Image (cartoon, rainbow, N blue to C red; front, side, top):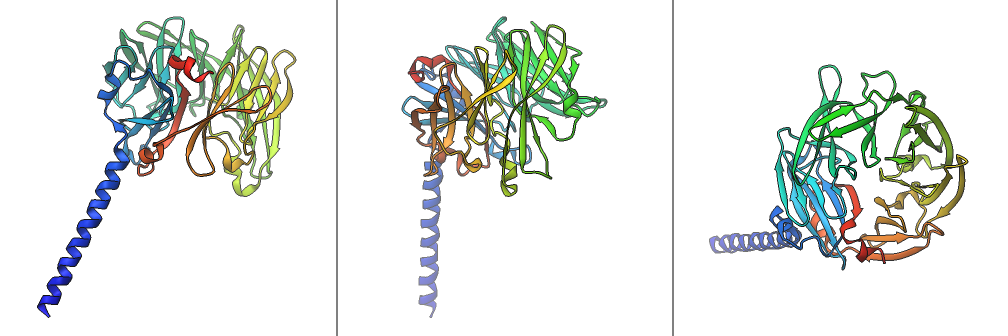
Length: 400
């Protein structure tokens, strides 16, 4: 009897050992394409990369950190681990990619640089970074929570010569820039009416303008769901209206006259109906969901239809369905608008990530780049995607 018991114990130990080995192998296989920051220091690290995706854990579950995932021209994914910044974002120009951790900013490109910061960041605003071409300044807008008299945000800005940071007032629901000024929509509850404001950076100084109010955002169920784009002397953004009483979703183009600092109005762009059981999918997942090309605005809605708008007549134009599923459940994860084509980060029918490009003219699919290894990196981590772009430095590779 004792012999049988020992045989059972030995068998159990062997089985446990097998399970541990399998688990170790799976874990090692999962993290094999996750690198440390040292990888980004390699001189030619970005040379074959065509796209970048930012994933992060939440403020409530930060231990899984963040992953900046780089996709090369063959579709292979390589990730660099960082600190968790919920709804975090990455920035770029034609030579560099800039990302941030809780207390650091990293510049990846010709010469890798790391800049220590004083304040700690845990939450951003989602695709709220950018590059001011005129003075060659990168910036990040971060959510710092409720202060004594108003909501606080942290702006970080700089370039290869150094980075600065400052606490400024406001809770931002939309951001953008014109190459010189940063523009934000401030919906801090301490202000009676949501406000469109300009932020001016002058070397180590930041000035937040008084701005102009946006009355429609005080009306029932109207909200801003896009970035801000400046064309000539006007700023544009997209407003959505969705009520619990109706399946109808409406959206408009809002305009701010920058020269006279005045809200000019909101103009109908389109509408659609959505079944109540999937009403949470009525709004585009990507904040950067429209683009201005010549005098035409292109907005990609959650039904995968490209809605056009004539900025001369201020009237809607034709609708262009993209050559993909128009089901709300299958909408793309992220959108990146280039001058010549539209890029979508999508999940294929087989559950694999893929980057597809589409035509502005007829919605035709132009090119498909399956991503290899991304699922191994993120599937066992509690992270979500918060930013995506095609890498400008290597435009000659992906623009063909």
